[in-house]
Image (tube, rainbow, N blue to C red; front, side, top):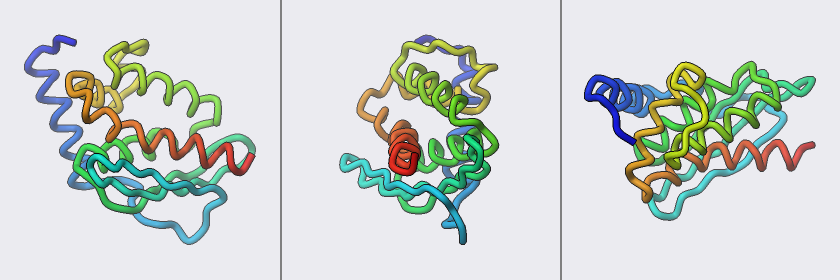
Length: 145
């Protein structure tokens, strides 16, 4: 993937912003679904908390520790999923995975800040950091369906 310098700067700024000031961070008092995410390569270890009502994710939060990229990816994911339907989650999950793996199917406009994760396509060893949260949400939803 070739990116112009301004876009590259924006990607890095978004990832740093979410990594240093994560949104939806902390364990909520109440939730209906939960799952762990773990990346043995970096030592990232998180818990995902979801509140699901009527096939929609009314809130998504996470708690734990990890590298800046993983914290940012969890933060952006929770922000995007809060208010999303399960079908929207599935679409976003597939679009983010494709972007991270360098085979983007969605435009940056469709993904919003999640598009910043596409820079990881140039660092295959870091792709797991960006995807473990999505896998945990999938497990949480499957376990409680």
